Amino acid sequence: MKRTVLCAAALCALGTGAWAQSTVTIYGIVDSGVRVQTNDGPKGANSGDDSKSVTPGGMSQSRLGFNIVEDLGGGMQGLVNMEHRFLVDTGAVAATDFWRQAWVGLKTPYGRITLGRQYNVLFDVFTSTYASFKYSPYIEAFKPEIGMSLGARHNNMVKYLAEFSGLRIGLAASAAEGNTNGSNSTRAGYLRYEMGPFAVGGAYEQLKDTANNKVTAATVGGAYSSGPWYVTLAWARTDPDDKFSRATLNALLGNAGTNGNFGVSTNMDKRDMWSAGVTYQFTPQWNIGGHYWNAKQHSREGTTDGAGKAIFAAGVLDYAFSKRTDAYLEVDHTELSDNPVFTFANGETKRLGYMVGLRHRF
Image (cartoon, rainbow, N blue to C red; front, side, top):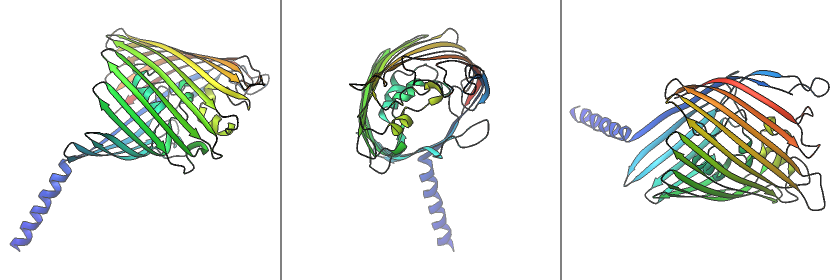
């Protein structure tokens, strides 16, 4: 009996030690706003009507996530991330994929490797290096720049990340298993360098559709952050093969509510987007920021119906009640031109949006 008690005590001690070496962090964002959009009525005589809605994600998409880190000794850690996105207004799942991120990884003194559904390198370099706003990488309800990241996330991905002083190197590949939006495989890499208040970075990705046709995307940019100021400048290009599936491309460009039908033409060639922004924090609670995007699409040689232009602009005034809770007032503008095909679903080419919302992060 005494031996049994001692064995049980030893097992409990071992179990306690193992748990002490692991941490499980529950995190999330709950964000909701009231949004008004002009020229958002049904096609026809009422196309100029305004629409009003409770937006389930104004500045950020609401989410619930789990980060798990286990200390394996020798400078190694086991990593797990699972993140679910949901709609605050209805409580429904935000997308068909319940887990927007789901990966397992290993961190070593020589870098970190992760496997599963995760962000691609285009999204990584944009959000880490020249995010549109200092206090929020982008506006969830208005995010034209996300259309340049080929879907932002990919399934079946293996990603390697290493950092040396201010230099970060990332490599990624997705297996050919019927990937997100009908694509089969990706190959990508990025570099990021930070020195004092300056950060610069760039990324390149090649993605194939189910017929083995390719689309490539590249981005480069930088940011200056000092005191209350944050300034960014960036460029991105999307360049599909002539035979690359336009249905797949349209899904990858995404966010049709903001971009209208900009980019769905069969004869689209490459698309370039320049963006610039500035954020100023004039008190510990108050931030104001503005961002401008100028996109130009080219038509395939010998055609004209694939070309077009788009201008996007947004401004945000943000007030932080605390480190976790903030309120925001946002205004945005979209203007499509130089092609009668590039319109919103109701045929309009201009749209003004504005919203006020509340966000809590935990």
